[in-house]
Length: 408
Image (cartoon, rainbow, N blue to C red):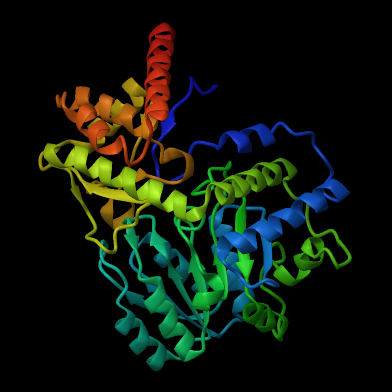
């Protein structure tokens, strides 16, 4: 069965595809060993180093898989069976790291925090001193709970201990500054469908010098052939043999490369300011209707706004009605937060005024809250959008309303 029509994705991923990425999907196909592909990939490597704030000679690549492949590839390359992995977990994706580490044969210990709370740097310090791990893995922005972990303090703990640091930057890189070299992060990854607003299917990664030295010093082969970074390095190295490793998804490279370039051209600081102002407008609009932030500042993740719905509200019913009657997709909780929270995506192309104005108009009907759209617009205009963008958003919403009326 074919999809029935456009759905507005206000989820924590995937996000609406950036127009430049969508256009690039239509570029002519090339072979994965074509010189034009190599030249384009060289630009992607330069842009990824900039996006991550990595060392000038950091290895950067697009792995042919989602962000979870980026997670597993880092652990598989940095760890040999029996070596120690310390995971800092305060949600589903931290727990996933621990599960992957165990499957790879590592000795795993976990430092935890309650859902909705950040990892305590002192807990991490005590654990590193007691466990002496080779690798510490943590999540910058925990998608499942909307928590922004204190990366500067956590990275300082790991750097002082001397362990390698792997960071899940899936909901931060591309929408918030990330200073990989300055912080001492050795391996970082994201997913193409998150803050970059490209199609799902690629994991942009960056590997620092210290991490590559540790990988090259392994005494046993990497446990996964597909994500063996030394084996694929020659394909990505402009001074190397350009050796075949696997067939890359060329169209996804075109699209993700354009999405990365669009993010850098807009400016990461500009994008962060955009998402923070829009999130503040959403909170100001929904607060009087009984919605409350799940995470307290300063640890609230700007790109995934976790909200506690009003007491007594059937949140699942409202989300179903948004999807069925208004073609708007909003996500509930994940893992321990399932049934408790909403998670609104504010990444890349879903962090737009017009999209959230459309959500407010739909909620105004479903919650019998007619003041919601005007309250949102009053806060957002002048801080998030200018008059021209607001007018364009109104026209787009009107066109979508007409389209849906004709379709029904």
